[in-house]
Amino acid sequence: MAQGREILAIAAVVLGGIMNGTWNLATKDAAPAYLTATKGSWQWENVWLVFTVMHVILNILVVSCFVDSRTLFDVYGEAKLWQIVLMCLFSLLWGLGGIGFGVAIKTIGIAVGTSLVCHN
Image 1 (tube, rainbow, N blue to C red):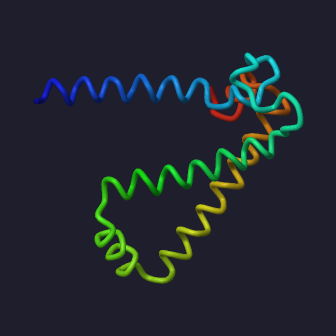
Image 2 (cartoon, rainbow, N blue to C red):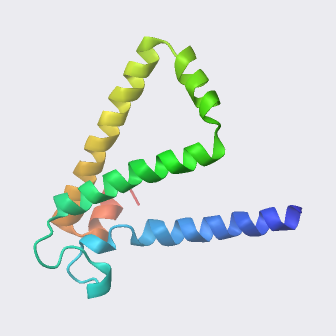
């Protein structure tokens, strides 16, 4: 049983690495036509909107698969108002940071943009 978990963990790390390395490929003109959404009338804002909506939907589905909805409501029910407000504020800031990162990638490119923004 433990060996199955190790294989699953390694597969998750490999999949995460692939996704981390290729997540913004769809916004680049040099990407193959079957991978890009920006050829034609799509602008980077459209790609980020689709990404954000799908991200929210997938997060809700994943969380609801692993956490009982009653437990989730209990967690939010026990939270204080200021904690909920802070969560919403930091979520907004996270979204603005994502938009800024998208602008940086579009402006200066994947390699330089990722290196500068991620401090590599």
